[in-house]
Picture 1 (cartoon, chains in turn cyan, red, brown):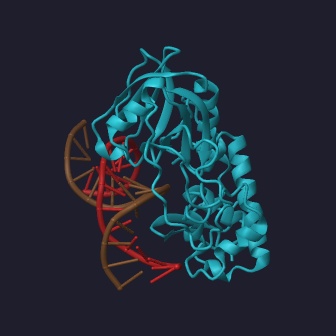
Picture 2 (cartoon, rainbow, N blue to C red):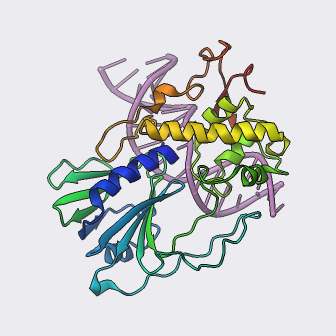
Picture 3 (cartoon, chains in turn green, brown, red):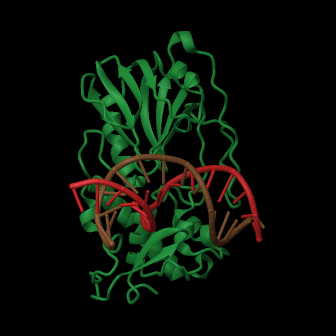
Length: 297
DNA sequence: ACTATGTCCTGCGAGC
DNA sequence: TGCTCGCAGGACATAG
């Protein structure tokens, strides 16, 4: 399941391969829920567009496009998403630097992947979109379980703060007064964006905090440990090219390596790497949750 | 306003 | 061997 490190790995691979290229034509599949904009609108926005940049916001991939001359008509602005309660209004620049351009937004969901292939490569089952590039290659979106989504917009904004950008004080503030389990809070993209089930479990293990602890009950010392643990885990995972569990591969079809570094995720019943106690598996927020009952309090 | 839960979707592995 | 069943989970809708 692509979380921040996997999406970042994909972003880097994509940026290397498609920035500067142009989209000649687009094929979109017949699964309507994959497309959050009308398919015709996506096709119009993409066809002829020049790829300026590939960025990441949380788990979203943002492909910045300069529309073709023919299609300069502006897309509707992104609907204003409800602001998280404690989010401060960022100083008033409306839309941001690229508001003038078009953005192709892709969320990979659980099993989504993006591949840059030659035009004659076999088309995998569950391929939902293909963009023909001027270089002769194709950018393909494949997603067996169809939790992934794509759409086009301008001035894409999303709630939550990047866990690798936030400072420690703001991090601590996010959890203040919350009764929900800390694991649930970590998965809430409106608070922090980019953490998913794997890295939430791994971060809590490194911080020595039980997943069911009420978020608001964490001491400042624990929050400091958690802040550092998250940064450490994400940084290491990005360096390893992400974790390959089930369907994850980067744009070249290469798996990540971080799964060998998992200390609790997917290790229910096995011995804790630190103390040897059996790792417990419980369900929190409807998600499989793994922790060491001795190391995590 | 916050929190918890059900829903979507397919592949895979366990069990018989 | 071949079948059924249950599980995996990110984001969103809905209910409490």
